Amino acid sequence: MDSIVGVLCTDSQGLNLGCRGTLSDEHDGVISVLAQQAAKLTSDPTDIPVVCLESDNENIMIQKHDGITVTVHKMAS
Image 1: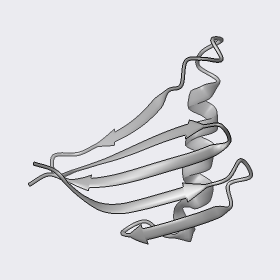
Image 2 (image 1 turned 135 degrees about the horizontal axis):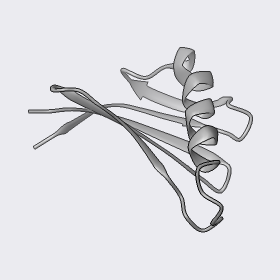
Image 3 (image 1 turned 45 degrees about the vertical axis):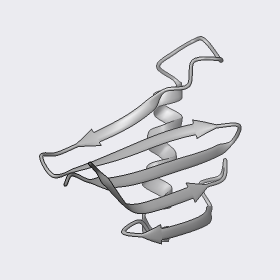
């Protein structure tokens, strides 16, 4: 079972709304840009992409919905 080690929420301007664990406000700009660029890959406004960054030991998932970007950092157990 994976364990969540970090969470970050940003607004539509990329400003930090809150963070815990391994994710901090130093990550908010990059994460916001990744979510914005992923949204440009589809022309369907109801299609909400999820950006997944994966390694052998951890995953970072980023999703933007209604102007809020949520990022979750998970470590594999």
